[in-house]
Length: 327
Ligand SMILES: Nc1ncnc2c1ncn2[C@@H]1O[C@H](COP(=O)(O)OP(=O)(O)OP(=O)(O)O)[C@@H](O)[C@H]1O
Ligand SMILES: [Mg+2]
Image 1 (spheres, rainbow, N blue to C red):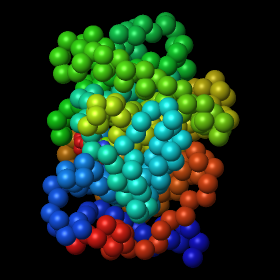
Image 2 (image 1 turned 60 degrees about the vertical axis):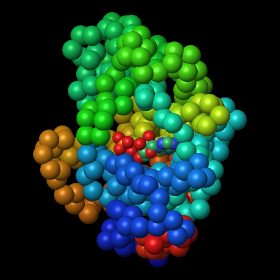
Image 3 (image 1 turned 120 degrees about the horizontal axis):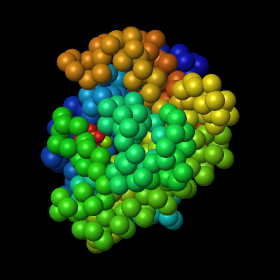
């Protein structure tokens, strides 16, 4: 079966939910995020992260995309392996294409967002703020006369406070964040240094692959021994903006949007075609949009890693249950 045929067949059997009561015969507390379902094994200090095929946009789950969970998990694995010498991360094992077993950490109450370009679509984005005339964003001075999608003079960190489930996150400056008193300044500054180093490596590798890593978001936590550890996902198309480098300049000069590899495609369909930007129940995504999104996620995996993506054709709930001993 060729890959497109596998993706088509997967339209009816995406990984949407993880219906197990026990893992390895034990009942484990679970936490279901928008994309990842986590089982917390406190005894072993491990978190079993099942990356589902759910797609979140405008802070809501809008449906599933064939092979998306596998793409995200295997991309995170690629980057965690690649950056392990730069920054400790939570990855321990990958027992299934959709599963990562991770060191359980205490998450820092902030997302570390690194940006190298003046872009964004949501009302809280750096571009929307700039468009409204703001020349200071999260404590960083922005030059006059910049255009949308232009490169910033240097990458900046724009911390974002983690809102409770359902709420939107808020971007803050370092001093605003520290004034909230939720994070130790020394820990924050070390995490900021790690974010800058990882982002530089991400940009460097992306450029070598013909891509621009325009921005990304890191989550970090404290391991039991206090080590600041990168958790969750890293440099995936869900947490990052990737653009094709080859025609970036030409398109910028013509005032066109960069060609992107991230979930911008689905966001645009939702906003422009379905007229939905997060209020009320999300629209049902047609199969051709889900397939095109799958092709783009796969392209991001292949371009970033230089490897061929091989979708696992097995029905995912049964396959993962077998890998984890889940029932
Ligand atoms: N090693 C780890 N230790 C502790 N928590 C982790 C670790 N890795 C990931 N997490 C947490 O697991 C969850 C992953 O789920 P997911 O990314 O789908 O959530 P989300 O929808 O982005 O966020 P939310 O927590 O708001 O639902 C996140 O809450 C993330 O912070
Ligand atoms: Mg997340």
